[in-house]
Structures are given as structure tokens and as C-alpha cells.
Image 1: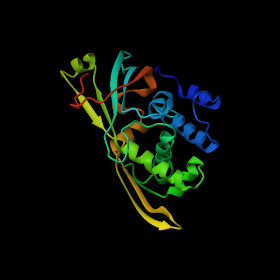
Image 2: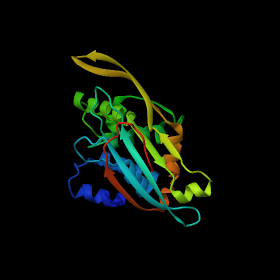
Image 3: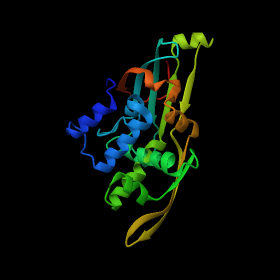
Image 4: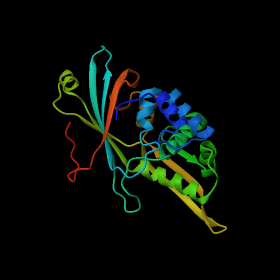
Length: 238
């Protein structure tokens, strides 16, 4: 899939082109992504929005310009770990919006830490504009578990390796590094009384700074995305 500006994605959503209709609250979260991360990084972070089915991973090939105006390429693999309670898959449907709601609470509302967020499900539901139902709460929980399983891996191109006198470089990161919740049963339904998500602080800083994976996202000229199967040996070759 070629890179398309987030503004085009908004028009695609408004036109109902294979993407679920969104509420004004959900559009406000997309506007937050556009303003905070720009179109290229925003599109990367929102990958999977409106898509169905389980895909174990994606491979992105991203072309951008470095500080000297030279074209660089970066390959980024997004892989979902296996969990017995969750089919391995990258984010899909409206799960990226849940991640945006958590980021909004972390970056805009709390502003106390970029590594830990305590929140209520009511806060997230309010930002999403979702009806407060057991199903909606479960969707929030599942989205958080989904992002917890994601591993991001990337490597440097030959030109960049030569400049720093290396023959190989591989980076790894996670967006969500942990989470916890406490629950009680009320009127026959389980409700969380406490929720906390732990983020990789460096990942969040680079996301805000539009420098994730050592890419200048404001200079991205193209981005290709293809699904991939996870290799049994777990090795990556760039």
C-alpha cells in the first residue's frame, strides 16, 4: 500500500470508502493525530484503521530525506506476538483510535509523565464518543492488549551503515510495555476500578518529535506497506 496523506484518509472515511463511519469525537482524535504527528507519521500510526481480519504483521518500506537532502530508505517490521487469549494481529477496525485516545490523555491532559498513564474507562469512552456498554469496554481492553503484543523492528540502509562504519544495525521497540487493571462485578457486569498503561517513554518522545525509528517523518516521500507472515526463527534480514 502506498503512502497517502492523512488528509486523504479523512476524505476517504467521510466518503465511506471501505472505512467505518466515524463520530465527531473520533474525527477529533484524527485531527489530534494530524496536528501532533503530521501526515506521514499519522498515517503510519493509524495503519489498520477500518480494516478487518487478522494480519500477523506488516513490512513498511519508507523513503525519506536526511539532513543533507539525500534519499534514505528504512524498512520497519511490525509484528504481533502470540498470546493464547488473542489472535496474533496488527491493529484493525477502530483499535488505532483507542491508542490515540490514550495518547491524548498522556500527552495533552496529564502531562505528568510520558511513561505511565492511569485512566478510567469512562475517560476513554468519552474521547471516543462511544456508548458506555460492556462491549465498548471490552473493545478498549482488547485494543490495549493488541498494542501490547506489537514489536517494531527496523534497520539502517547500506549508505547509513557506511557513514557510521557499521555492517549491521537493528533496532527494536514497543509502544506499550505493560498494563494492569482491577475489576469488580456490578449489576452482573465486570467493571474496572483502576487502569494503568505503561509506555516506552523513548518511543513516545520520538513519536511526538516525529523522529520515530530515526526517520525524519516530515521529509517522508513514500511509504509502502505489505503484509507478511512471521518467520518461525524470528530473525530479520534487512
